[in-house]
Length: 329
Length: 195
Image 1 (cartoon, rainbow over the protein chains, first blue to last red):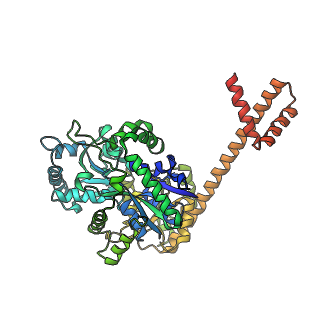
Image 2 (cartoon, chains in turn green, orange):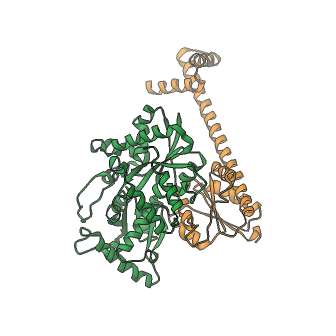
Image 3 (cartoon, each protein chain N blue to C red):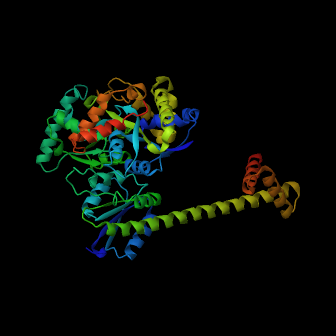
């Protein structure tokens, strides 16, 4: 059976890509046509309208689409969680210098958040609120920015958040269109390498193990759903194995990134100690860690979506959301 | 509000395609059409322009910017702008097929938007057809050149007439159930390699 699978070119799309490239899908009797999508909205629409049968998605966007509050009506299930801890907050050189502690960013991120709150408050009072980029309103990036603000005692409403497509991140920072952004791997590494910003806090610190990306499956695939999810899950385990790191980076480079960013892509997967600046980079987790059954992660997601004003405090809607999660396990 | 008072912004990575849509909208009497380039400061430009409708090609990574600007969350307290009428799946499918999406300000009647979307669908589909035809024509021209070269090679190497050379190409293609152009390509490639 031939299935159309969509993804956005990011490190955490790896399990979806590798499910096809390693032959796991074929072993389940499925031929996957992979399609790189230019935006989350377009991926969501194509999945809802039947141009795609499954997709790598932002977890909140997948839920929002399935619940009918984002994009065309859809018949979706969240087949599998894909990734954790790939996001980070990068600030412009100027702003990161202003919020750095005495020892750079090696200390507690909450100290950084408090410094950030002070700067943001002053800027707001001066009529020039701090502007941060996110990838889409329905994303963990949105909630991590909110939590970062709140950790410092700042009302998230004091910030201006705009969507910045990740490939425009470096330009947006260098032109001062944003003061920073929250993005997934490898875009924080790209910005640092370009010398336009510094990572000041990790998603892994602000909201440990937040369910960032999931694999969403259309109801249209029927009985092929379980084998499809199995193939992607297997690929996820392969991706998480450090022995496969080189091949993983190479294959991702071919599908998702220009070759010159491969070194940066590799860094996204490494569990590294603090670098010279005192900030540890690289916590993206795929495979078993991400796929583990963890109802508290869905709880967290729903809570944050409510806090952001995206979901009602509606028991029926919440029950519907829970029913959509992991029906294949 | 009449058509002539509407401001429509067009965002498309393809300048040629955007120009075709602009022409179509102008012909329909839309008052103001602004083609916005897909740059990092798009958010600022759209904010400054305050368009009534934004038509954007699905290839553009900037769709997510519009998602947020239009306030896709109905709790956002901003004017809810959605892609046409969410219940109009036929329209949405036709638009996605044609490769477009649109965001509108609240308060604009669905029929007004529908006519704009219809024009965009027609124009974008026409453009896609032209692109396909062009690509096919280019392919045919390239194939013809290959066949000419292959004939020349056979004529030189085996002392054949042009007709006989072509017959041999055709016979080989039929025997192997391949296209004549593919056989020609193999001959030309081999000849290039063997110097």
